[in-house]
Length: 224
Image (tube, rainbow, N blue to C red; front, side):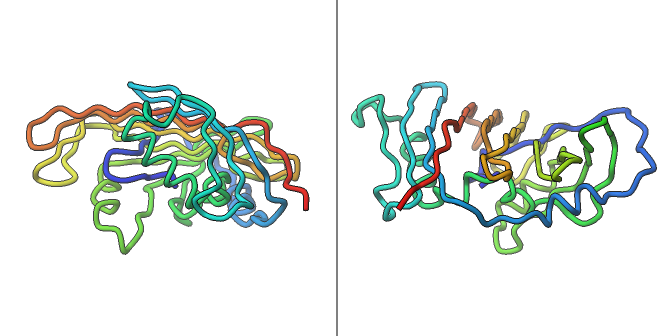
């Protein structure tokens, strides 16, 4: 999930570049790319201000058994790590893939930059119509997505708040930045290899800051 609970998300706002005149076929192709394929186990690295942790994830196992943390021991887990493990266990397969971020990208995303290999688009991110907190967050956030031109797929999605904003009367966000970087799995789909979040603000005048890093590597297909 690109947008975890209230203080988790952001975008990279492309600045100043004149929009190319080409169409958006690369993005449409990337969003329509197949989402089904082999199931993979993978190595998970998690880091926040209080803790560094790593373990393995096996989406083929029953819920509650999918995440095995190698370090640190459970008695040293932070509150945010515990929440992250629960989310990863619940969505061990879904949260691996960059295609999950497509739900935030509207049809009117605008092409703003191209290279020989990639196309980058800016957009106003869509929010879950049933999630009021997410809707409030999205009002202060802008988005960017980069896709590969060859075998079109999502390579990076970012969200950022270009200026401070108040998603609710008791909360103010001064900095809001999250970026998901993607790599190719053996079957060609792209997975979220690096996910960073940095949010800084206040709730009921109490200062709040969250900075987390999640990395995924060493994908191996599950064999029966």
